[in-house]
Amino acid sequence: MSVVLWQKDGLFERLRDACRDSWDAYTTHPFTTGLGDGTLPVESFRHYLIQDYLFLVQFARAWALAVYKADNLADMTFVNNSVKAILDGEMAMHVKYCESWGISKEEIETYEEAEATIAYTRFVLETGMQGDILDLVTALVPCTVGYAEIAMRLEEADWRREEGNRYNDWIAAYSSDDYRRIARGKADFVDRLWHTRAGGGRFESLATIFDRACRLETSFWRMGLERLP
Image 1 (cartoon, rainbow, N blue to C red):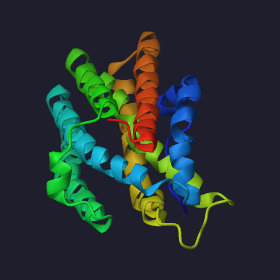
Image 2 (cartoon, one colour; image 1 turned 120 degrees about the vertical axis):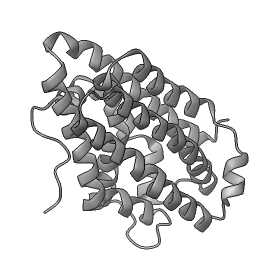
Image 3 (tube, rainbow, N blue to C red; image 1 turned 135 degrees about the vertical axis):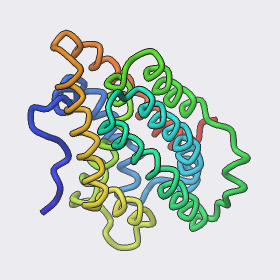
């Protein structure tokens, strides 16, 4: 049975529903459709891959900041595992995947961050610096859960090119049950933080953070699609 990505009526679902226009613009962006039907230009995908590696560097820093922002061992352990997963696993896998597309690690590390990469990652870090762990995780969670929803949609779409689509490996990685469990864990974590740290008065400010993160994800797709610097 496929893993359900979030708890019904939890904070994540409420945020997603409150920011539905931005969420849908992010998760149904033409970049993602191009992944599904194989029409995305190769150079757009290569540009995205390089920037996604640079994004992961800052994403790891943001989860490391969440270790500092946590005030109990259980939360510290959860976010520390996220840092380790990025640094010890995901980044190495990303480099290997880039190499399969003819992009060396040395080439990746010579690139500058695109404006969309800077805008998104620094927003997340600044949100974490100014707020508490709930603010920070609210800014982080659309990325992880959104990728799972995107890949699930593409995996199940009737129009997807099953054979010969050069992006099938990307879709398979993010639609796998293992990745869905990671995404569900992040959604559950933000739900748990809501119960332990928040009251109803914080929902509007959290929705603003969530909405901004979704819009920045959309800008990140646009950066890849149009190969923006």
